[in-house]
Image 1 (cartoon, one colour):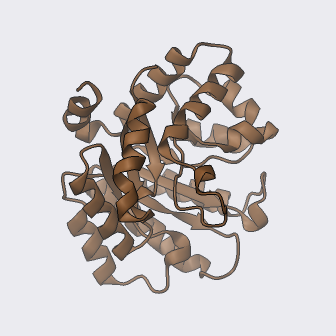
Image 2 (tube, rainbow, N blue to C red):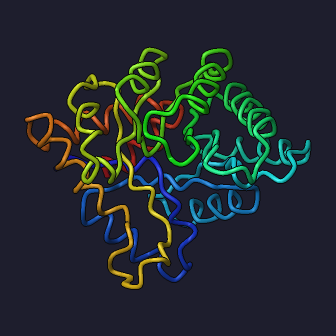
Length: 271
């Protein structure tokens, strides 16, 4: 299998003493680049620190919509400062999350637009999620607002992370030039099979969204970057093509998204 890029994780949230082994297991599964995304200012600092200590890890910086309490100028200034670091590869994790009413929708919209603006100014791709109330598969509240925000504001590459939605939604994103990121849901959710089969070869990437899954009592069942091979395998089955072609497409598309860091990434991928 070709070298792989895990476009979205939170591996910096694991205990520090686990990082080396997590990366080692990833490398044994051909996962050579791991993007670890922050969810608030302090978490973004941690993602950046872990990326500095591990050559295979790059950082995403951002404030997750459910982490918003207030959205102040100091937070924007911190994100702007972090964005100049050579290991910061994207603005993430940001977006809209209407799953519950804990965070004001207007505040979420303001934060999403402001963080897209930072991405535009620093030529960094945006990796986002848009989540409907009650995790509706075909809801059109958050998605309608999100698509309008992206259409009006996004001037860089965009990725819809951990995609869970119907073809109508996927097609609207693809028409905006936004990539779809497939994760483990494609293995278990039948409704996602249509998107996997229909999506153009140059519009998808893969991720594990790895984070400490403490709700699973068995540590061995926690998702890690090495599970990316399961996702690649499922895509190849659904698209009726070989694993090498899928891994090549996902890597090539990832490199297109992270083109601003192409030289850094190639040194690691082809080491």
